[in-house]
Image 1 (cartoon, one colour):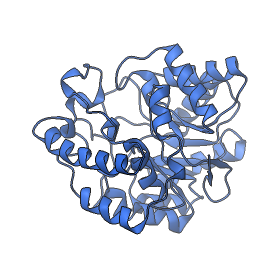
Image 2 (cartoon, rainbow, N blue to C red; image 1 turned 60 degrees about the vertical axis):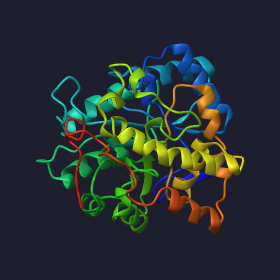
Image 3 (cartoon, one colour; image 1 turned 120 degrees about the vertical axis):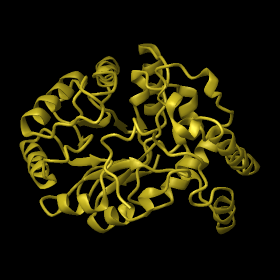
Image 4 (cartoon, rainbow, N blue to C red; image 1 turned 180 degrees about the vertical axis):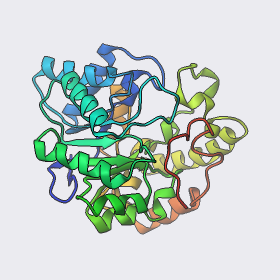
Length: 328
């Protein structure tokens, strides 16, 4: 797999990383064997970079990664996150030095490593100045606990404030063919500042696949069950566009998932998407997306199938968006 640089001076990482949130059951139950098989497939496909968090299954995702690395004798490059107060009301964040250090050390222990390549503040604690938080993260970097630091779901203005203190290695936000808000300044700010932009959910939480989803079969623990885009009448309207995208992909010998990820990769060489899956077969549907190159005709067709703003429904419900930094 091709590689891209993480931040201004960071290491080269695989152009596509693996998001490991689903190891903790956000989209349905999984188990150790399934997670291990997915990590095996990622390694074999040339993926070097994983994304996880201390709050994914209250540390379960990190634990599974750590156990796999010990069992297989292989070390991935890892990004993890902290700052969300686990067990507190949704949107509660603590970005204090003491809290972040405690949870970073917990993450390192579960992962079985002395340091990680990237550490994100998962959600901002808005009363606390981001400059103060950046100073904390920079001290962790200087101590050797992390290679770089970043933020998840922040605004372009907040990124520029943080970057005035120390270089921000990466910013993570949802970005895909059906979520385009980062085009309103964030992707450009990342490019200007030498910050890697990391799109999560580049597969639209699974909607960009070769078979139809059935929301009626979502389990209660599935994040999508109460997500507006997967509820009627929005879901049926969205599927009309997805089926057109599927036809576009199949006409060219590609999978739908690979097209969706290739689209994100071709929005800039500073983007490293993190599609998530707990299924090795699904991973292989998009693992070669970095080999796809769109022609001008392809781009025009994609713009017609999925023009900016085509998606029906908000990307989060009112309950789900609590704690997200909004802008524009």
